[in-house]
Length: 470
Image (cartoon, rainbow, N blue to C red):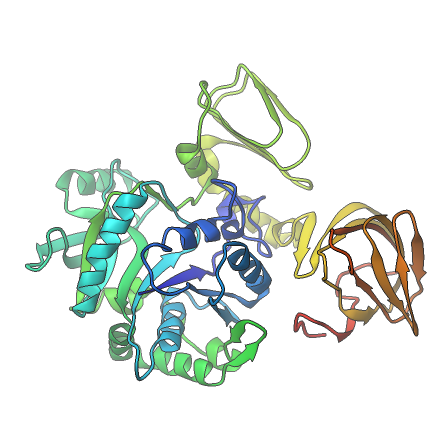
């Protein structure tokens, strides 16, 4: 069995922590490790192979680093040039896994879900694996415990003779209103649609070809023309862009006669909003979920999160307060689903706060904006031991570097020299330059930029260790 982790989501309802360049699956929202790492970890004792992760090419270094931190030596990372929903993502994973000697069962999981009962999860997956080996396309239906209107539902049909709990799928239904959700709950025949699946690679591809031959052909072409880039499999852009976009549910599961649903009770949550995080988070005696440097006095049933400075709250109830270095979100818990509306408004206003954080991660380390005004900005830069930035130049800005910790190997024009703590240098406009960390501890420096244009797109790369294009 091979775990296939789908990591293409953007998690807009968890803004301002989750953003387009650093979405929720790469953040430690529930524990000390990221949600991607948690998802991989819960499959470790179940699978014979390292996971296969399908992600947006912009997130490839997050995925590679987090899998390395988790101890995986041979993961497969498939890069989507554009998002095309879950059906094509599962198809390219199946094509990658299938060969003349191997037709593995794939356990397809979103990267950003929470599971609290790992024993129950493992038992249900084991049941699903047996059915998948018999040729069924299996999905897992979450047994509902209240009338949720934010999830789609699956109606179970006749019980399968060769399984204790699994049944055929009668139908998939969209998110219901409250009255309909209550009816579903009372009937006992409906389950929340978890978005988790199990099937043999060949069976999924056969069913997809029956239902959407154009999709499977474009996926085959994208895999056939794929290229290797460091540890990544980069799908062909032109082919994948031409692929129809659809979910596994719509493209295959609603049409196949080989579908089955297994009820799951494993403490599942899709962590789709801040209120969901409050529901599953560890609470203090007053019902508050507190993350980071927070002081709460006479506060009840809040989610209070600070990613830096002290957050002080006094006498508040049922709030979500999320403080990041560049954005403060305050909302009533009952309005948590509407955070997406804020993101849409910011997108319409072309605000960069939906794209990037104040701290921006790069394969060599990260940088964070400290101050900015007309014709200058100040950044704090951290470079990992042994890492280096691209050999580059800028047309519109000069840079001053001041080392505050560690040592820096600097290339400036035709010269190369070493800087240590409290030393500095100047990079003129248009000068070819590179920054490296030759030491064994992180390199920390302050960069002062000055010039007529300070955008990140004013970079001309001549050499890059991470395969980034100019």
